[in-house]
Amino acid sequence: MGKNILLPTDFSRSSWSAIQYATSLFEDCDCDFYILNTYAKETHGLDNLTLLDPDEAFNKMSEKKSKDGLGNTLARLTLENNNPDHRFHVLSKSNLFIDVVKDVVKNLSIDMIVMGAKGAGNRRGDNYGKNTLAVIENIRKCPILVVPKNVAFKTLREIVLATDFNTNFNSYEVKCLAEIAKLTNANVQILSLTDTKELSLEQRKNKILLRKFLQGIDHSFNVLHNVEMPTAISCFIESRKSNMVSYIDKKPSFFKRLGFGKPTLGKLGFYKHVPVLALHA
Image 1 (cartoon, one colour):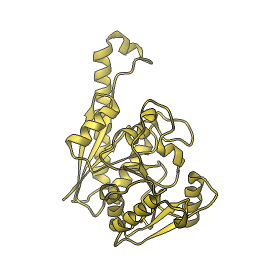
Image 2 (spheres, helix red, strand yellow; image 1 turned 135 degrees about the vertical axis):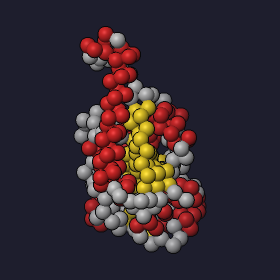
Image 3 (cartoon, rainbow, N blue to C red; image 1 turned 180 degrees about the vertical axis):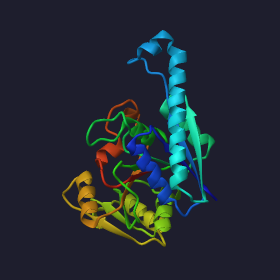
Image 4 (cartoon, rainbow, N blue to C red; image 1 turned 90 degrees about the horizontal axis):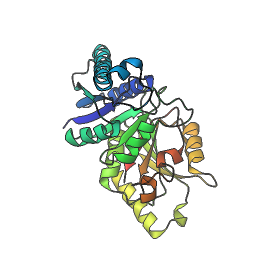
């Protein structure tokens, strides 16, 4: 059965890197790739033409820009990708980005979202873009792969899974990670900050479950002491030249949904040189 992959784009370099990464990662899979661009009217920063006729002017200009950009992206993909198992579709939608993504994921039975770490409008340094964080926080039905703009796909040798074993793992969460590991023949390195002898009974059960779901995949458990998780991951992947980081993104708490507290991806730190796979609990 083929996969349905959603590729949001704002036509930035980061978006194009994510598209290239996705098509290379799933080179040996039957896939339908849906390239999505959205536009919604802003309430500030309007130019003179828009002020003369706000709705009509904005809609016409934005629709043309969106469709032209998607057309150029599709043409570029057609030249660079001759995989007979890959099919590309373009979606231009006039609505708020996160609302459109929710609808597309539901209506097209999307298996994974692959997107850039930040878009053209995000100029800040080592931070993920607001749309990227919004997708991870709000889209709970499929995994999300975040690709930094300077990352080009190369053979996956090792995937790092960061966990504290407090998540009650189930097959749905780990399925995507296991599929990628099998597809690329990569090994999985589970990284935690707690020794097995210090785990609670519940944590030990979760560790056993994780080992069960990774059966048939080369994997190992690793512990780093006296260091925070972002530093632990950075040091680990740098020393081992790991190719991807993964983690279980827990459901946002009530207070986090109100805007209090940092998103889980933000707590893990920003990674310029490796993609991050967010799995949902």
